[in-house]
Length: 437
Ligand code: URA
Image 1: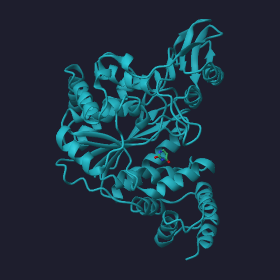
Image 2 (image 1 turned 60 degrees about the vertical axis):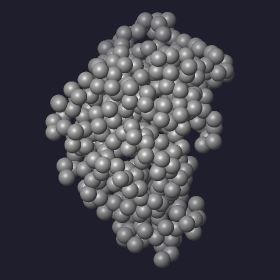
Image 3 (image 1 turned 180 degrees about the vertical axis):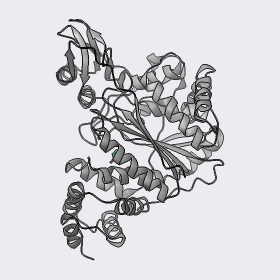
Image 4 (image 1 turned 45 degrees about the vertical axis):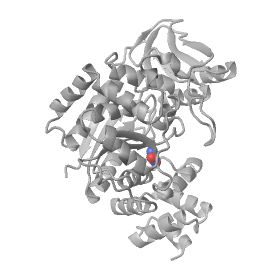
């Protein structure tokens, strides 16, 4: 087979065979296909798309490009959760210990921040000494002992995705539905889960901006799950404003702990309860979503979720005293307030700009190797629909230099719209798709 013929076929809107897709991914993984050829292929896919069969073949070829984890040593059903990427999305930090405290074994591999979106690994690494680089044998041992591990993806998990993702990032080909679906599902299938709950973000802070495309992405991912024999539920959630109020790393850890302490309610907690309910259902911990929600709420009230988070931090070498004393977490020297120039209501928030402003504070990366400033970030004081007066604080900004503060404030100044009419923010859950196998 010749790669230029395969690229030309997709350029001409023709369907690729399973063998051609396997050839492409093999060449990506063993570096026999050059970056410029991979990039051309990615652009051809981005423009002309892949059908469901091609997307499934691409997913399986990617999943098999590295090692496929075998978690069968851990008894009971393993349910994995994945978010397509959002802003102020500290869900995993609270959801994982909460569901683990109800007997669901959690082996969760997460990533670092991507573009304007945050990453669970960066948030966890803001806890002093917390180790996220764990070998799979040790991870399995930890789950047998305390029912939970939160870790970075192992190096040999879907190596093809690492190569493709890095090229997508610099060739304007991230926002392709079959490429997003295969990237996410290949990692889920390779990480050995029995069932999958997907949080598909939709809106100004997500890779997918509109509802119809969020449905398409969800349909394709649950179809891949079905073909692979895994029950998969996709929950489409609103990302037209940051999910929680804290956007950064250590400040998101604090928000997650506050949820586990039962001190805060709101959209972040609502999503945790919905995703958690499906995880417990798919994991056979209950037969009913209403019961599942009550179980989760109970383990917030009785602090079992919080204590599971403490156990997790201890097991992974972190300082669990942060749970009782937030001053042990990294913080920043400079603080500024982003102030409203008008009276009115917050009518919309360009959430990707909030994420971008957060990167300017140092809480995210401009380049892959940038060092993160774990204590920096933004705390939102107003959300869509809130009344605001001139000179009132919309957000607080934390950074380690005045320059970073200024840069973040400048991005924030274009992120909020203020008008005269009170807007009712959209529901947090926009749709649920279930392959019901
Ligand atoms: N998250 C992923 O893992 N891959 C994508 O392509 C987009 C979001």
